[in-house]
Length: 90
Picture 1 (cartoon, rainbow, N blue to C red):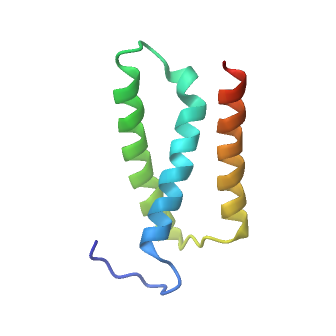
Picture 2 (cartoon, rainbow, N blue to C red):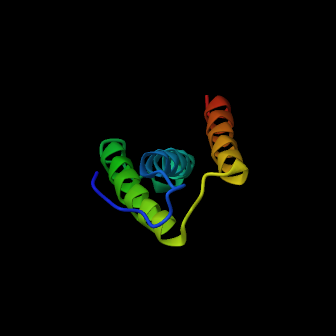
């Protein structure tokens, strides 16, 4: 990716990975609410992940999002919620 960032402490690869993982966790948590039919669900969920990751990364760049302790905690809590929800859905 060729881009110039105004703040050198923001790394685009880490920001994109963070937003991808966060959006994926939230989409997995919301998947039962979005379920329409089993054949359409994977396509809709993957499309949602791509679009929402792009939007959230652009917004993160706009506001100068920094990957601090709070952001990493939010990511960890999101994936723990995914783990718990999958554990109890069996």
